Image 1: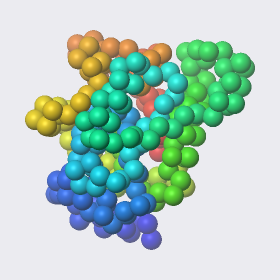
Image 2: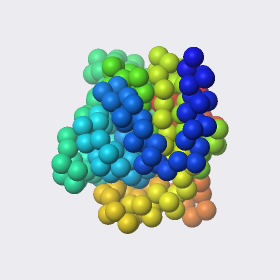
Image 3: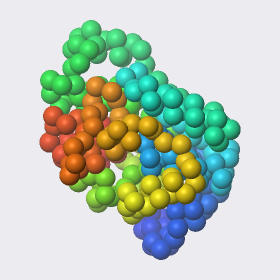
Image 4: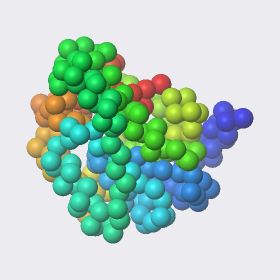
Length: 235
């Protein structure tokens, strides 16, 4: 049933603008849709659009406890610009305490398994709580971002989140389109983007990229490209 719906809606909106896509889904799933913002450039574009289309729609972010100060500053600037209060979800402190006491503060450098455990506790578990009561969630995924995302579609079945639908309105946008929109509408963005950080996550797991490097090269740079997902969007 959901597979048929996904095929139908992907075909229906294949040539639609991002605003048209958001208008339909925010109306059709009102009260049952949520936007998970990572506060990246793409997500700031979506915040701008969503606030114009449906100001009461749920917008939230996940605070892992290891974020850049610039990211926290952006939360304040975004709330002020759009006259909103972005909901913030934190990891369960007991799980964090147990993990750190067992494996160390910087366990993620030691193995992919440790890093994924850290991401699960700090991101995935809070995401599940944040999405309670929602049938569909919105993300800022783009195919261009990495090899792990070039097979994603506009609308997908998210089997990792209890079979919810996942909507990726910017899936076919280029990086230039994202920044053209930001500059045109004066959308607030993370100042680290001006310092060579195209993709920003937790402070210990994010570095600036060098000229010619992939936009995700600064995320978990010690791992192979095919592993560079925290699990939120892992198929």
